[in-house]
Image 1 (cartoon, rainbow, N blue to C red):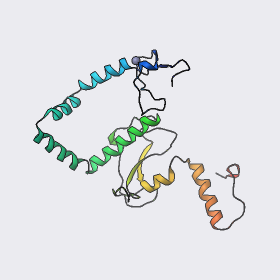
Image 2 (cartoon, rainbow, N blue to C red):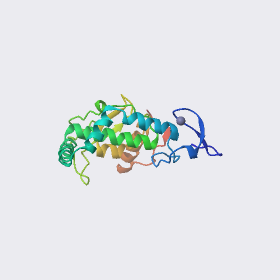
Image 3 (cartoon, rainbow, N blue to C red):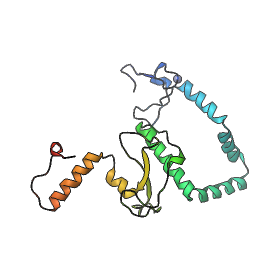
Image 4 (cartoon, rainbow, N blue to C red):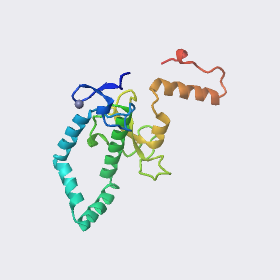
Length: 195
Ligand SMILES: [Zn+2]
């Protein structure tokens, strides 16, 4: 976050610089990149020197028919389990960056079980409008980030119910809902909770 004078610290070189020295970013709450312009230029240069980036550039520079073949392959791959695991991983990474949540998992941490471990329904990739049973990457403890040991794949519906709720909140919610449905008087308060 920039201070009152419009200065903030670069996450890379740690120098205090004016926001004019940071690129704007819609991905971050404060509206600026965490790295200063100088550091982000260095990062872009380093990125393009990487073998994978060189390979992607080669595809962009390739003949149209080669690019078309690659595009068809990618369209096929993204629909495979491997591709879908990558998409879950990648989308979580973008969400984490936007919300400033730690993200240290690799694709190997995205393990899709046969059934939802919370609702016990078979997991299957649905469509945009029918995705209740689609696999969805969840943070077990929402206070922690996407870090090894804190992620699992549950159904989209389970994730929608759980959201960022903590276990005591969920337990209280279920208990009070049950009491209301059974017509029992007096809702329990958080302090009366027996855990
Ligand atoms: Zn810097």
